[in-house]
Amino acid sequence: MNEARRATIHGSDTTRAGRAACFCAILGVAALRCVAQSSAEAALAGVTNPQRAWQNWTLNCQGCHRPDGTGSEGTAPSLAGTVSKFLTVPGGREYLGRVPGVATSPLSSADLADLMNWMFVRFDKEHLPPDFTPFTADEVARLRTKPLRLEASAMRASLLEQAEAAAGSNR
Ligand code: HEC
Image (cartoon, rainbow, N blue to C red; front, side):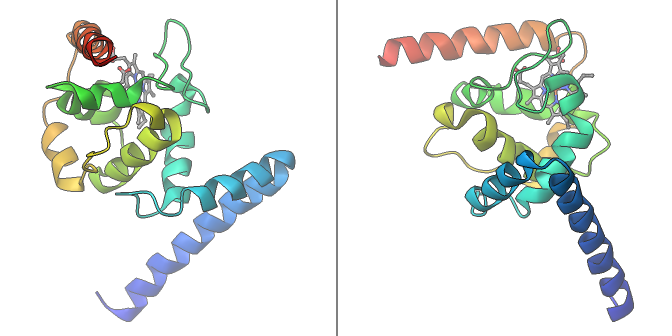
C-alpha cells in the first residue's frame, strides 16, 4: 500500500473517531459513560478497536437489539445476560455466526468478528467461558456463507435449552 493511500485510510479513521467523539459530547452525561466504556474495554481479546465496534453496533444492530442489548419484544431477543450462553453448547458458536442479523449484515467479516468479540463482554460477560477463543475474520467469513433462515428460531430455542440444562447440572 502506498503512503498516500495509507494516509487516506488513517484520515478517514480519524474523522470517524472524531465524529463519534462529537456524538458523545452532544449527549452530555452519556459522554462520561462513553469515556469510561472505551477505557474499560481497551484490552478486550479479539477486539482491535472497541470504539469502532461500539459504533458498528449503534449503526447496524441496536435498531432491533436496543443500545443496551435488551432487545425489543417481537423484533429481536435480548442479548444481555444471554448471548454468551451459546458459546457453552455444541453448535452455539456456529449459530452465532450464521444467525441472519449477523451473517447478512453489511459489515465486513473483520468488523463483524471485532463486534461479536466486543458484544460478548459488553452484554454477557457473566456467561463468557474462561477458555473463550475470540472469533476471527476468517471464521466469521466461513460461517456467514451459510446464513440461517426460518430455522433460526427453532435452533435458538434448542441451544438455549441445552445451555440452561448444562448450567443447571453444574450447580
Ligand atoms: C432486523 C432486526 C435485527 C437486526 C438489525 C439485527 N438482529 Fe440480531 N437477531 C434478530 C433476531 C430476530 C434474532 C433471533 C434469531 C432469529 O430468529 O433470527 C437475532 C439474534 C441474534 C444473535 C443470536 C443470539 C440469540 O439470542 O439468538 C446475535 C448474536 C445477534 N442477533 C447479533 C446481532 C448483531 C451483532 C447485529 C448487527 C450486526 C444484529 N444482530 C442485527 C434481529 C436482528
